Image (tube, rainbow, N blue to C red; front, side, top):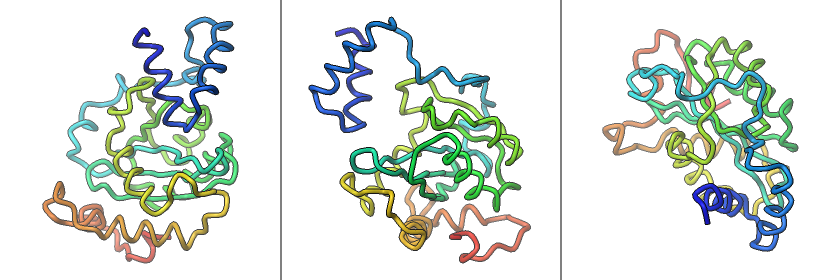
Length: 219
């Protein structure tokens, strides 16, 4: 049980694979050696090249993005969390393809493009169109190291909160925009101790010279 094997097993458990499925898939992977094919994304830029200011959470505009997978891997919800304010945006895709994920990320973040400096994701193939996302949003795109969930710890934490409303047994193909707006409203207007009991909405909008309404931010 090498560290690589343990990390692989844990990653498969998070995807709700059974022990039998993990064991069977592991045997097939041996044909290809020890490479992690999740990381084979063209022109990938690693998190080690990300500016240090992002880790400090001193500015608005650095986002973590992830996909929440539905029951039997049917459908997904895109979660985008701004690191300093914890402000969260959600979008739904029926099929977790790179094209669909790219389109949904751009659609959700574009209204806030003036408040986007960087985007950080894991190495899922659904983020293969990262260059298109970066170009359309005029942002820098970075990838965390494989199996290092702590590098996107805020995203993982917020995903846990989202699961209160969208349990793992939910078929996410049929989640509506109204449901996602409800969840965003609850999360973004919940006071947080880490924010001095301000809400993510208040912190995200504080000091903004753009007049942004609550309704607009939730859309």
